[in-house]
Every structure is written in structure tokens, then in C-alpha cells.
Amino acid sequence: MADQGDPLARIADALERLAPPPPAPAAWLDHPAYVWDGRSARGVARLDAPSLDLLHGIDQQKEVVAANVARLAAGHAAHDMLLWGSRGMGKSALTRASVLAAQNADPASIALVQVAPDALPTLAHLFTLLGGVARHFLVFIDDLGFEDGDLSGPRALRSWLEGGVEARPANVRLAVTSNRRAIVGRSLGEQDDPINPRDVVDDKLALADRFGLSVGFHACSQDDFLAIISGYAQTLGLDFEPHDALEWSKRRGSRSGRIAWHYVQELAGRAGRRV
Image (cartoon, rainbow, N blue to C red):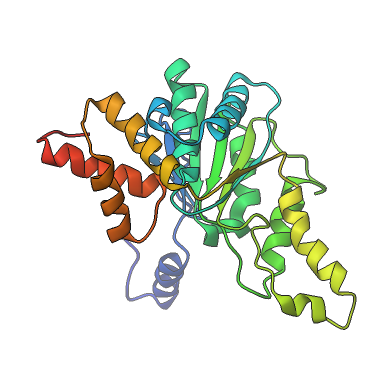
């Protein structure tokens, strides 16, 4: 411990508190998933994801996304993915489930790294770290959106996806979920911009165009909603009445895969079971 009577020692101690030592390197081979906070990664002991067999009503999307993740895990050419569309239709669950399926085939092949949207400025550093690891990674940004007028965030992400001076690591791909097809918001005011309004719109749409896969998730009809519940119920051995399921959705004010799963959890609870 430094001599607290020495002014220089007190200054040195204060500087250490203001600038703590860098965090220990993450054990990138030890966990199925990680959470990146912009400065360091925290390992997650268990990837919380459903089985692909439990995801119903999104069969086409499931086939495309799971196949792309499997290619990445195998070291083959794979796309960055934009999963966009209606809330609660399984965008995030499908991303996690696809990684879990690849890990079931080979646990060491791939890991999921979830990044908070506010940590986007540190993506370049994260990719540099991952590029030196003998493992494949799907970097996951859930529910991404940018504030109106924010052009720096979309441009930075667009540069990494394609066109940056630094080559992307071959073992890393990006998966983004968003409620908007273009990720960034659009308004009628853009059409009234006196200085080339077409450029404003094109600049925003260009970000979504950089993803090799753009997969849409759409609001489900009443029949789709019941079909999703039926698939869950058959898999889990639960009985349900369609009118009761529809009444549940009316009380919730919407129909989606998420609401269907909540209803299935209710059925399991009534039956005294866990899911």
C-alpha cells in the first residue's frame, strides 16, 4: 500500500480509482453464450432458448434462419441476418433456438454474444477480439432501433456490414431483430426535405440492404394463432379449447406467438405441470 503521507502516492491512488485496470480477458471457449457490455464479456452458463420443434407458425422463417446459423457453426459461408416485423412473433426466440440447435450438434462450434444497442460503438473492438478465437460467433442485437435524426449509429453499423476498410472476421456474423424493416424510422417529413429527399430515404434504407438475409415476421390471423397453440399443445401433451384461447387473446389485446406461448404456460399451470 502506498504511503498516504506522500502527495504523489495519493495522486497515484486517485488515478487508479479513476482508471481501473482493464477487465480480464473473456474465456471465449468456455460458455454457450456471452453478454457484451461495451467493455467486457460475461459468460452465460446456459443459453436460454426453446427447442426449434417448439416454435410453430414460422416454419419458413425457421428453415432459413436455422440453416444459416448451421452454416456459420460449420465454418461455411453464412449471412448477416435482419429479422424484422411484428412484435412477439418469435424473432429473438428463433435466433437463440437456432444457436442452441447448432450447439446440440457440436457444443464447441458456435456461441451467441448478445450486445446491448447502446454498446454499438464498441462493436469494432468486440469483432477484433472474436476474430482471434478458434470458434464461430453470432453477435446478437435484439430490438434494434435508432432515434429520429441519428445518422451516425446506422452509418457505423452499415460500414461494418459492408464497405469498411477493415475486413470482417470470417468466424463472426451479425443477427439483428427489429420491428421495422428498415431498422430506422421513416416519416412523411422526409419527402418534404428541400435538399434531395430521395437521398435521405436511400441513406436509411441502405442499412437494411447490407444484410444478406432479411426475414419478415408478420402478425398472425386467428387461425394462425390457434394453429400455433395447437402445435405447442400437441408437443407438450396439453388439451385446450379454441374459444378459451381466443378469449385469452382478447383479454391481452393481441394475437402473436408470444401471446400463444403465454396461453400454453397458463394451460400447463392449470394442469399442474411445468414447461
